[in-house]
Amino acid sequence: MKLKLDITPDLVAMMAAEIKAGERAVSTATREAGNSLKNSWRAQITGAGLGQRLARTIRSEQFPKGKPSLNAASLVWSKAPTIINAHDTGPLIRSKNGFWLTIPTPAAGRGLRGGRITPGEWERRTGLRLRFVYRRSGPSLLVAEGRLNARGRAVASRSKTGRGVTTVPIFLLVPQVKLPKRLDLARDAARAQDELPGMIVASWVEARA
Image (cartoon, rainbow, N blue to C red; front, side, top):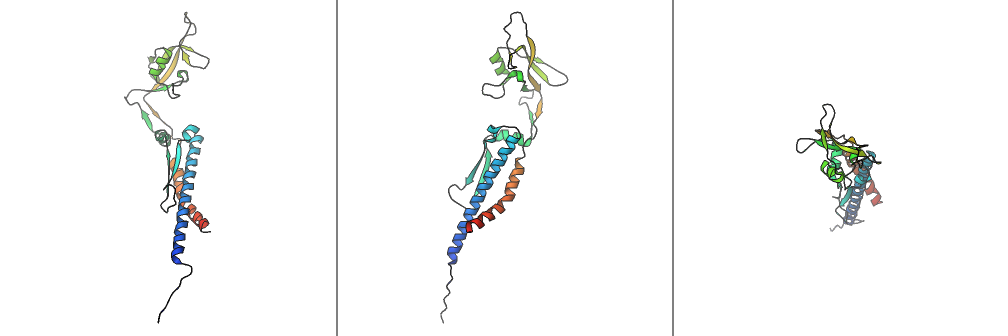
């Protein structure tokens, strides 16, 4: 006796189609989860008042590139990790040489590249000398003898009689600074991770349909 078993439809073809649907579902869900996390982190940064420029340093990328995979993954990162980490952890910052941290006052202005100006750069730009003033209570100071211009910046006085010249605080001196924790990136990352399985299932059902 000879028996023959025909299976319709072809199980091999069905399994291959199911695997392809799974690959598309996993890749689609991980890409959407990565983009969602990127947008959440950017929203946190702008919501904390840290600006659009820092928010745009958050990027996302899909792996593997150009093809669906059951092992697909999304990477979300920042191009300014040191700054982001500082606002995410709220570290205690001390001077590298063990002396003072200099914090510019509004009278100091900004650095040439738009960043925080240093005492040395300030003296070179203004031609004024800074003088140390120790204070027992509150931060000590670096001050200069000059005048405030219309923008509130300290500049050299043009008066030959000394009229309008005053002692202007240019820098505050503190031994350390505790940055406030302004971000909670782990919270959004955990939420994205928890939502990913449901997103894969939903995408898989849609792909099969």
